[in-house]
Image (cartoon, rainbow, N blue to C red; front, side):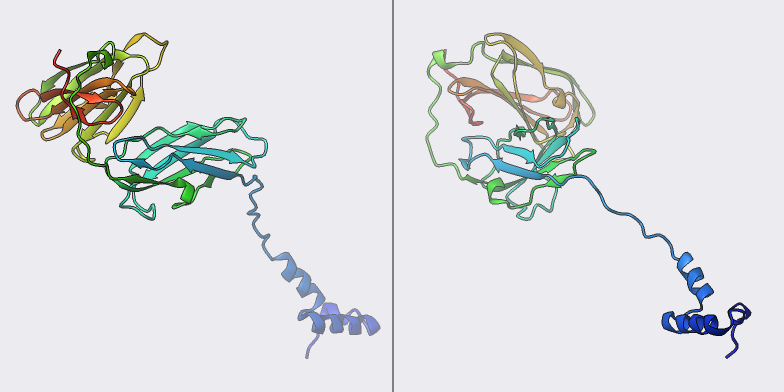
Length: 299
């Protein structure tokens, strides 16, 4: 074997040491240094943010038509939390046991305070019986990683049982009416495909809840249901715009409004969109917070 010149010049014992080192490590001294210097630096992938824990608990099981679905979450284990963090709540219907499809209902960007504590989602009145599944996701911040709850956490599943058969008596006690009784007004015009609503308002008292529902599917409706509570000093009257319904609707769409309060007789109004003329309007009453229209008192 021919020894490179720079190794031969080592001479004597130095040459022997160099050759032994080359055999032991698989390369001559100069070659080993060159090989090591050509290795790339490994990337640094460590995320040094803290990993918090999200704890959630859904509202209790209910009978269909006798309550609302909500979720509550709080986050622990954060380090030096920063402002701006949020929690997204997603509710999956009875036909999605693995939370794989689009959520039936969402309450997103709920602010999570720097000081922590529980925060709750908006509420949904379920339309059918079955098991509903909540999931909550914390957004994280500069010092804390995002974290999400799991599908089918027992504390996040709410069972809605079928409504028990019952006789719905007519409303007979004028003293139980919402006062002032709600007034629903609509301004719009007909279009080639249906109708365009320019303004929709509800005049009612502080503390009442306005439930707006749209029947017609995702292609015709801006949403399936929303609930808004009228806020302000007790005893005052507010005029609330239903902005989600101020848009064009195609023939066949049905819009429903419920103005309700616990233990009182509220207002139900339905608009069925038809071609070439104004919507067909139906006005009735509704008892308590159960969204089931009934006859209004005679007087």
